[in-house]
Image 1: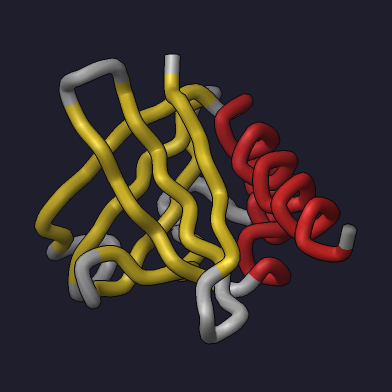
Image 2: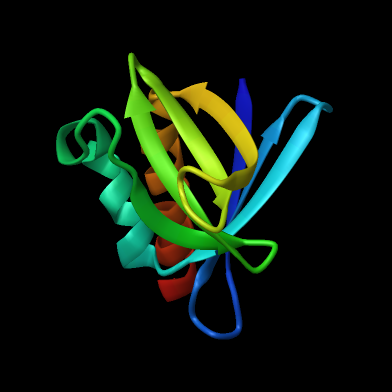
Length: 108
């Protein structure tokens, strides 16, 4: 299971924290519009193709769906990445929902 929190940053971007139990944590920053692209990632990327979206530790983040899993790759590109996390495909819907809830709460 992946715990997800979203928070609007001072620059208007969204910071999303993904946390897998006590084993790992990934903090990704992007625009709300970019996070919305994750909703249909399984239909918008082809095998071997990644969606470049967001930044983590000042490095680009690459998203790739394969066999019902999402590979989140942090690094220069989706081939020579430095850190990788694999989460269930449903996590992308949970991310989009967390971002939408944060935006809704901010609007009051």
